[in-house]
Length: 232
Image 1 (cartoon, rainbow, N blue to C red):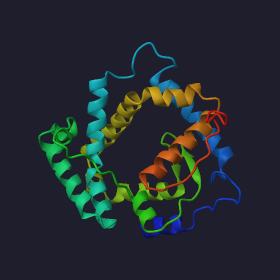
Image 2 (image 1 turned 60 degrees about the horizontal axis):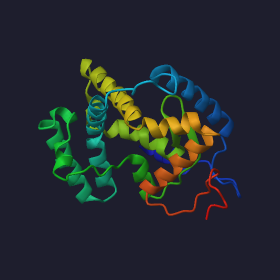
Image 3 (image 1 turned 90 degrees about the horizontal axis):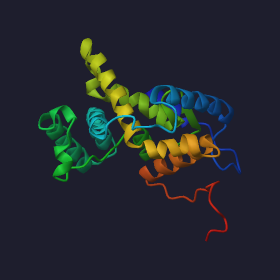
C-alpha cells in the first residue's frame, strides 16, 4: 500500500496548456489499437448479426462479478470515512451472496439496496493523491496512474482474493465472465466508440475521464472534440 501511495504521489504532472494529462499518448495509442484488434477477435467483427451474449446470461455474469468486488468496496468506504455506504454494501453482499445464489441474481437491488461503489483509486483521491497521467493497459483498457495504483491495492485488500487452490481459478474465470457480460450489456455504446468514431482513442479517453471524474465528484469543463461549436 505504501508503494502504491508513493507511486500516486509521484504521478506525471500535466503539461501547462495541455488539454489532457496524456504524456504517453503514442504508447497509449499503440496499446489501444491492439485492444481493438483483440476485441474484434474475441467478440466478433462489427457490425454483428446477433448479440454477444443473451441478455439474461450477460446480466448474470455481470452481477456475479460485481458481487465479488463488494468486500473491497466495503473496506474502501471505511478508509474514506463513510460508514453508511460500508454498511449498505455489506448488507447487499450478504443478501446477494445468499438469496441471490452467489450474486448471480440481485435481490438486494430489488428492495432498494444498491451498490455504492468505492475503490482504492477513489480512496487515493479522497486522501489528496493526484490523478497522474492517462494510461491504456493491455486487455484492461483506460485508466490513470492513480487508479492503476488503486487497482493493485484493491486486489490485495479484497479478502476473496486470498482464496487459494482451485477456487482461485474459479474466481479468475468469474471475473473474466463478468467482463464479457459487461461488454455485452453495453455493446451499443462500446461499439459506437471503438468502431464508429473518427478517432476512437480520443473519444474513449474523453468519455472515460468524464465518467471517472463524475464518479469522484470532480466538477470541470471538458472540451469535446466532436461537439458542434455552432450547435448552441
